[in-house]
Image 1 (cartoon, one colour):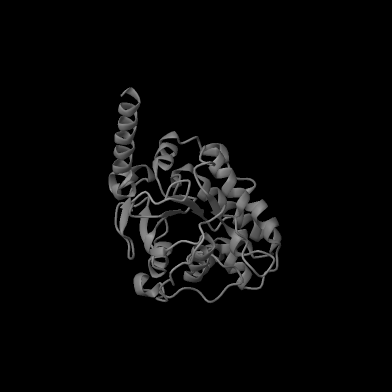
Image 2: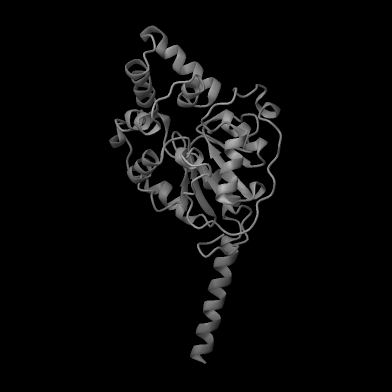
Amino acid sequence: MDAAGKSTGAKYECLLFDLDDTLYPMSSGLNSACRKNIEEYMLQHLDIEESEVPRVCLELYREYGTTMAGLKALGHGFDDDEFHAYVHGRLPYDALKPDLVLRHLLLSMPQRKIIFTNADKAHAAQVLSSLCLEDCFEGIICFETLNPPQLEPVDFVTSPDEGGIESASKATAMDYAGNNLSPKSPILCKPSVEAIEAALRIANVDPQKTLFFDDSARNIASGKAAGLHTVIVGSSEMVPGADHVLRSIHNIREAIPEIWEGEEEQQLEQFIQSIAVETVVRA
């Protein structure tokens, strides 16, 4: 769909992008810095034994999708904003540079484009600003969107199209990943199928017409379980539930040219119309 909400004839109507290690490579160092900050927070604020912190951090991440979700599930009652400020507020964002190649690609895509991240909104805004991509997306679905203080999700997506959304698949990620997801946590986040279904409702998109980009194999499996078309990013091999694989986010046009289907026809039609108008004027 174009900016006015009109169909362009493209195969997909919405592109749903993960943020960290998807729009920029893991080699940036933000991932390892974030893990270090999480471990420091656990040690300094949650009184977890120093020798146990790395193991607990990793196990909770694997079990619950994020270490934060695992800590909440274990009953730690820390403040969400305080945690995010400590973990993300000290990240080396200067390691991220403007990505004009990706910017050009994103702006050339006719579909709605939305960020879907487990991180908080401030972190998402900082990453997009550092990459010079802040105006390439319609909105951000983030931690606060799925875990607001009130009962109903906060909608950070700007003016989603009106209309219903088809029911997402009730299959579990086990169908694709071969392992069960974690026990319930107070935090709603990927790779929970419920989190992905909630994001689809908030964005008001049809999963069958949405392409989901993520670097996590678990998130890809859950995205497929929710009915999405899926793209694993930063990998050279397919993973269960993935429809496409991208070694780098910059390879989108070569790997998934159907994103631009209908655009060339539309541009040709506009060109023909402009010639027709010019011919009439000259006549």
